[in-house]
Image (cartoon, rainbow, N blue to C red):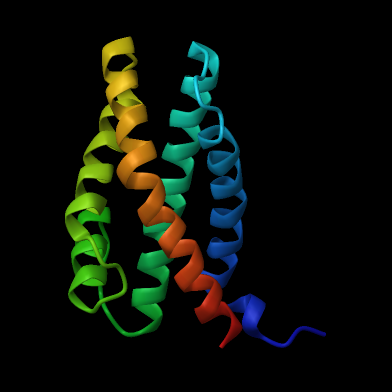
Length: 136
């Protein structure tokens, strides 16, 4: 028998997000990645980001908010203090959309730097914050 908490959609999705984030974390630890490793880092960022915004969406919907798109979700999550840096999240969304549809080395290098310096930290904060929510 389950306690019911595993049936909550955001908790299920959060579990998947944590697994993807772990892969991102492992590739972030590579100081000078090869082209293949860089591509993996970007792919793990894309997966992590996709799951992250959906965790936020599921959580917001459980709280009674009506959000559909990633942009709406990020804006609402920022407005209620669920995330602290809405600007970085929106930039991450834009870069995720860019990297999903094209691969150019110049773009990949720039996005890698943004992932390391800005996007990884906000995703790490989400892991920390939602781990606390998951325990409640």
